[in-house]
Length: 361
Image 1 (spheres, rainbow, N blue to C red):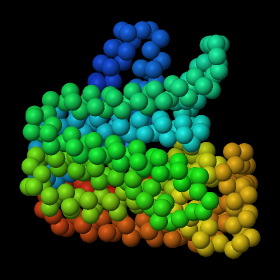
Image 2: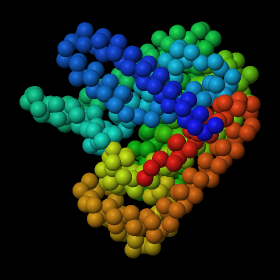
Image 3: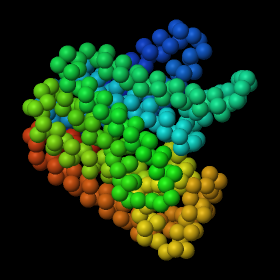
Image 4: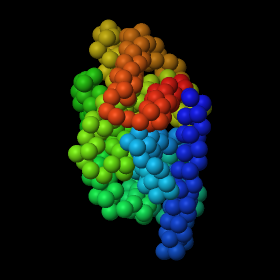
């Protein structure tokens, strides 16, 4: 059964890739018809979307759709694939706000356009050009996510059902992004605040809301699907937090060959994650001073990163976060037993829980 679900998810990824490639090909041709100067924009966005990514959000949406009894077709695959463009918006803007140099082992969008400015010896400031390009490409990805959903061929009942969920998801994402940057301005850390940020910045738009999008496409009457959506929330919210907690661990302890980012990148960026909050709550005063003297410094050496990792590990924070991931994942899996989710949906969501929380370090 497990191998069968892996095959189903792999086949679905291929279908999602095809829909994205088809849609981006159309949009790229349109952009280049406006001006040849837009060719780098079209190429960069297509490369960003098609050269990597796990497609977790559409996979969750699809699993919820079949879990609600839906029978998939091309228009459903196209509709859920639009979630990848929303994620592209979030990642492009996130990299810009964090000052990240890389994404998936390649230059981040703002660095790519900064380099392009320098290479072609353009007038003005390369850094400003790169920043402006990233803002606009992120905005473009957000607009295109709407276009892809609207052009999927859904019937009027499905559109009326899915749009409120889609809109709420985007509001929650932007709220989470602001809470994330606001947290960096605070004088102290908080596990509760960091968990809320994990939920809104990543967890809800990665798992819970895609699940609701899937169910809203299968069952268009809100009252009829309330019990189902409650079960999806009981699964999606804890799993979404576990997903982000895994991301936090990867941002500190991850292998660059796997994460596509330099080792300890979150430490250089000064990310106030649950991992960091737990470290500061459970370290000695001297260890806290040592940690904060280096935390958030862009010029951290490999040796500096290792010292910060040791402080995190010695505080017990790494172990506690792993325990949180396990407990949140267990809660999510328990929720699958309730709410009328089909056996196929349960099997797919069980497999996705493992994929999203057991990513390699």
